[in-house]
Image 1 (cartoon, helix red, strand yellow):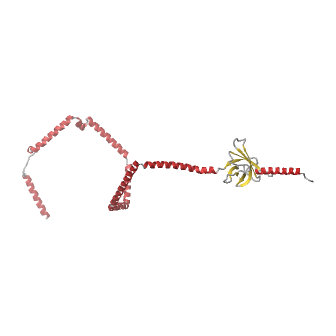
Image 2 (image 1 turned 90 degrees about the horizontal axis):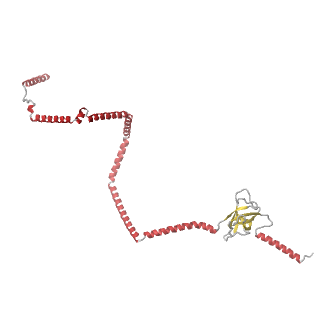
Image 3 (image 1 turned 60 degrees about the horizontal axis):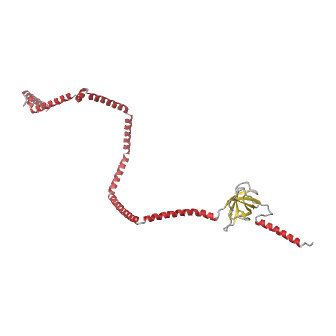
Length: 339
């Protein structure tokens, strides 16, 4: 049977169209012969992600991006549809992260596996994430350095201003004077140190003696430690005896004596008794004064004229002489008897 040219052309066109459709879908990441798992993710931005870009897990390509479109449910965000090999299981809490695959900026969707026991099914939407770009990472590193540099420049500027202030002519002169005074103070301190050193050397003997005396005192205290302890114990016993004595009764007696003394002083002040009359009665005082004056006059008269008051006798009487002879005679007889 002869096939016409028209039939051949039609078959060729059909095969070509089929190959074109299959190739287009393959380029889009869709395989018509394999039933793939369709998943979704919503992003604020996609940073150059395109259709047919790979989907990877730990660098292994498991699928491709199928479609990019604006989300109708979340206006302003981008809905990304991608498919993965149905043999690959993905936990439902996994994240679909847009990341760079090389330094030229090619993008991939990197699946960051979660820990859930439940698996994502076809049609589910995974949580989205975007890896920072090189510029963002550099900015994160450089920004703190920039802030520190700005602070350093500010501090350096302040330091330069302070240095300029101190280096003007007036302050320079003040600095010279200050350094000169400091030099003089150091010299004075050096001289003082030398004098102290000389004094210490000269008084070293006295210091040694003082230390020796201190050691001797310490040794004496150590030797007499028992006696010191006994003295302290005796003192403690005396203190306890004083504390145990009837101090309250003594205080009461003293208070009573003071009260009695107050009563006596009151009577004296009121003119009662001889002492009170002496203090209060002017006549008694005058009489005593007159009597004292008369007594002084009598004593003066006795001194001037003793013959008026005393009988003066010269020599001994006969009876006294006779008695004295008898006494001598008796004493001689007693001595003879003793011999």
